[in-house]
Image 1: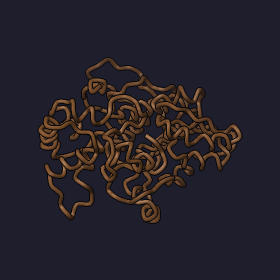
Image 2: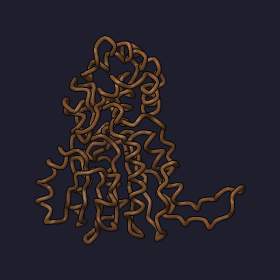
Image 3: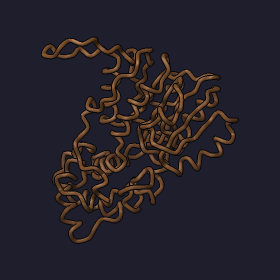
Image 4: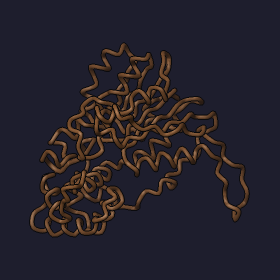
Length: 337
């Protein structure tokens, strides 16, 4: 996942390169100033990082896309030592930071640079290889589509894409791949459109949800987010601020659930022995923030964005338990290799 334009689908909006979403609101939430160290967990085009540096903060910026790191080297050199770029997963941001920090920002969306490059295979607007790998390593979306059982494909499309025609599409994919394996984004988009049709009144292409689902699965985006939230709890100083920008309901529910859990003491069960409640590790979250009309007019891809922020307390980090996120039990991606 990469910051920059917060692209979440192919529903429109045109090119929006280098437009960080809700940047003013993120800066207000973090309050950067000289002497502070802030982690930008999703560097992308460097929009948030540039705004943080401009206000005097030092930044540890992380991205698992090697292209984003290469493109950011000039900014790193010009920062006077206040920017350190890290090629890696933001789920390990506490390790990458190497210290407790004053703030963390996460932009949970694929960047516009990735979407606008046909060779990356994220979009069906531009025909290209059916790839979708942010880190440029591991199994591709084509591997998943061509090798997974129909039932597993249906579950991926249904859970990660919230696609109500998931079963029909998975069965159509199985029939088509028996004749010719999928290699291109356009081939898969064509199958989906033929299978469920396209209403001229629909605002999004019928392939949007399936492409979203494959991208999330191939990059383990929800697992990465869950681990990043846990890592943020460990990495923040008392009084440090966490700001997370999401672009669809699956991610937003995870962030909302995490902050609600961590800002309240567990009640336990009346059927189990009573134990001392764990203290709150975050204060009550700020009111959720969404883009205004002016920003949406400037960057249509911002329309579904939500910013959630909260302040870290002095309580010790709780035990890392991912079960609270209720992630689906799906085949390990290595099975597609």
